[in-house]
Length: 433
Image (cartoon, rainbow, N blue to C red):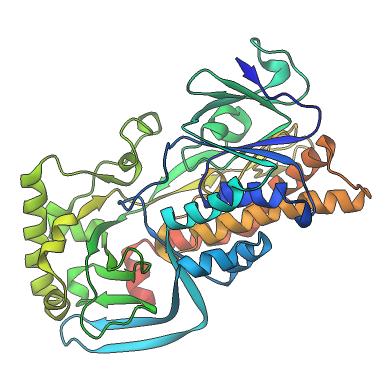
């Protein structure tokens, strides 16, 4: 059945992560200037609990300013953990050195940030949040044989429901169904895999003498070809999120650390949250073997660190897939110029966050960059309204703004993508260190 067709602008946002939720807030709040109806569609029935997907997010100045624009920063700060320092822990000697950050960051888990933004969005009269609503494709009304057209888009859900709207935003991740629905967007996209991966472990308590106001780097001798990042969890969870950052060269030394095979596009969504990020141990015996091998490696490479943690926590370890990012290649536009764009040529569909510019986690900029894209999109609409002296937003204004955002945003994020990818390669990491 078809539901919700209106004359006034309504934007459907596929993906209820931090980027999708902030986009809805920025576009719907009249006090922020746009004031249109939005519908957020999220495939998951409930926000993720802590898992190998629920990585720690560090919001720097850019991310914090984006939340401030959406009047969400105070709520995020209240539930997050302040990060004032970067600590360097000598894994052999046990000595600790701290370096202050220029300005404090906020550390949160992804589920914590999603819940925070969803609570704000769900209480807004112009925002509808629907969970358990996975998007299968987006089709322009006049090209959809099963539905009458009115110049907008039809968003098809996995349960057969169709939602009609004036525009659609794909904030549904690296394997975006919205992007795959458009040949002009998907033809630009390719997934690039880098030769590094993480082994994620939940440490249940803080080592003695460690503070909760920073991120910890534990680096063994270069010959081991890995290092450790340990990030304090928010107070309501406690403990540390520990990632052992490895490379293909690490696997040459320790074959038992080999990551799962790189995921193919056709496999996404078949195995739950873990399919993109990690392979669950096949059985209890495999999990035990991995923890025992990790214990032996850490005892040898970083004995002071190993003695400071609870060895049983290594049983929570999961080996993640190699990190990957989304490269968007140039295509010819209407003027025969070669460009990268995140928006369809009719201005009806645009991409945000990982659906447009997924980055590897080496610099911790994925969420910050995605939140910035939400702000950039809202700013493009506000500028279009201002330039045309509009008191209220129109469909045409949204289309024009989508096109301008889509043509400009890649130039701003491409350098971060390339730098993050470079830092995922062993030679680059050790040259920098």
